Length: 396
Ligand code: PXP
Image 1 (cartoon, helix red, strand yellow):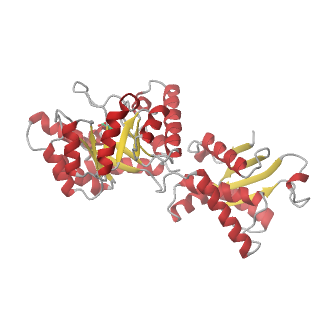
Image 2: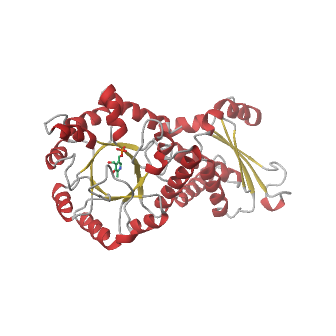
Image 3: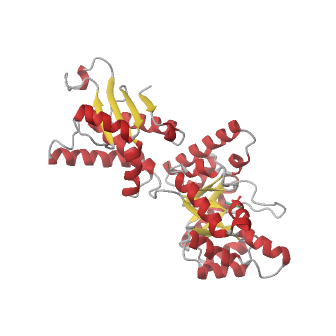
């Protein structure tokens, strides 16, 4: 194996996506034309990197990354190495985390940069040698970052809250309360980055009046979930939401049951995307984590996909959940690779959101039922803040 990964930091190890890190480092080795060499990547804490820095560089302080070329001091050319071993890269996860906050990057983004920086040192680049060397190394770093197609730039995914269920309670009595418009304002005050409503053909919960008022009052972003039917398409074109999410819609279902089958109705969905795009409304399409559907979404010009997390959330065993999780992680990577942005949602709650929020490929989480359910007992402000805390902490 060209990449030997050790994580000497128990508290962090479950939050590190080993497969992704090993894959990414392997890609970097190929890109740098040293694919036949092995590199050892050690993820440690500040204390350990400080000790190494003290022993080998006589600097008694923690640092972000240290590189130890194999056979350093003997002969500097790769060809002369007795084994095909580049050397060791040691990264402090504590410093990486602090720097990710300082530079307003995702933790994953910072880690990727540190791996690139460490690898370039192993390959003989040295920004400390001269100003010219510094420039050369920086240019290489930018090249490699671009090659990796670094994903989301924000430190954590946005939380968009679906307030349909507030309307469901109201409609149960056919009165004027509770009002989803008030709920949306409270969600925003608690830190939500967006509001989602599904205007269903049968108007079982959200009403036209709600959406029209939301358009005028919300300060963040209004995401209108909708089926691709003529009446609602016209409604969306008139409303000008910040984005629309196309979902399948069946009258008899309790909630949206599965992802949209773009492959089976490419022409119809493609025309809807085109109409929205010509009105400058970005389109997201709610799909299962399926590569064929992802490519079809890319083909018809969607800006986002929203990955259906329902199977992951409903999985009956840890093994099944892990399988669904791997599917979601791979699907989100593939979507990013072909230039789509990725949201995720359906069934996410206070127990199962953290691993999804930890994926650096996900821009936004769309969550409704769990937050509104908790709000019944705790109030909506606390329910939103508790979910935001989970998302924030998932970023290692
Ligand atoms: N995303 C989509 C496309 C949905 O249809 C729904 C449910 O309305 C959600 C996210 C939110 O799901 P939940 O209410 O289970 O959090």
